[in-house]
Length: 115
Image (cartoon, rainbow, N blue to C red; front, side, top):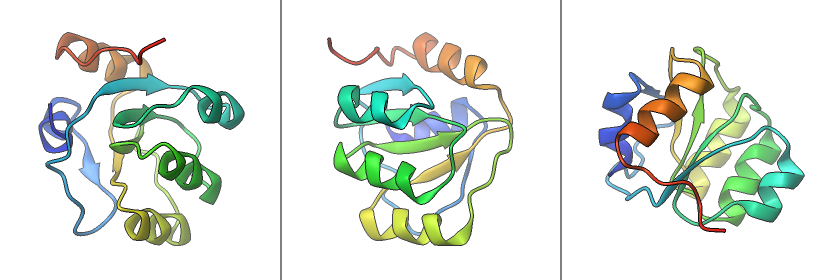
């Protein structure tokens, strides 16, 4: 599944501009503890988090994640959004809860990360 197709499934809007939304999603991941994500994140993950600061973008970039997904209409400030654009990581905002987003990703066949 691509980021664009996932956006439709989770009713998300793109907060970043001119990003590659055709990137394939390899897995889904949800966690708000950045050190945990740094240790377990994987390339191509669609990461659901309520965190919105610059370090979120750094962790997503470290693992070359497919996108960052903010639940419940959470917004991100301009500086982290511009950094996400520089790093090529789409940032999405969905009206759904993290629970609902993960349920829809699982129902769409997006697997959990490899362990």
